[in-house]
Structures are given as structure tokens and as C-alpha cells.
Image (cartoon, rainbow, N blue to C red; front, side):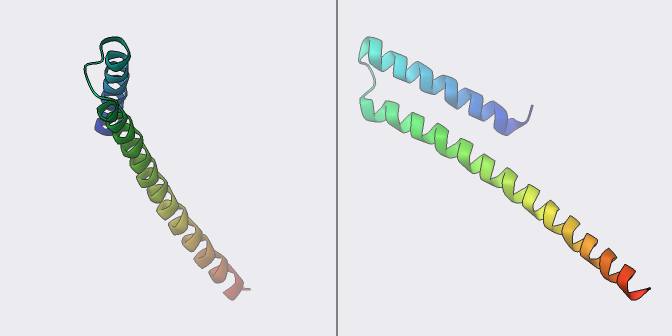
Amino acid sequence: MKFSDIIVIILFVLTIIIISWYILGKSPTFEQSLLILILTITFTNSLSIKEIKTKLANLENKFNSLAYDFKEHIRHK
């Protein structure tokens, strides 16, 4: 399990605890509960975007090498 996955799990659990605490005990304010939720969603989305960028870069490299191989094949005919 990656470090970023652990952070997402911790933030998600913290969100559930804070929202439950708000509902049951009125200790944190609504804005604080909402802030933790937004922080969790934002961090998770940024990790997903980073992962997609990495996969896109790998795909682009594979496509470029495939195009190069195809051009070489056409030249030798």
C-alpha cells in the first residue's frame, strides 16, 4: 500500500469522525466538518489526476515507439 493511499484512508476516517462528532455532539462547527470533507476529496482527486498523467505519458511513449517502428517497416519495403 502506497503512502498516498494511507493518507487518503486517514483523511476519510477523520472526515467520518468529524461529521459524526458534529451530528452527535455539536463540538466542531459545520464549516470545520465541511473543510475536512473538501480536503479529503481534493487530495483524492489530485492523486487520481497524477496517476492519469503518468499513465498518459506512458501511453504516449508507447505510441511514439509504435509509430517509429511502423515508419521503419514502411521504409524497408
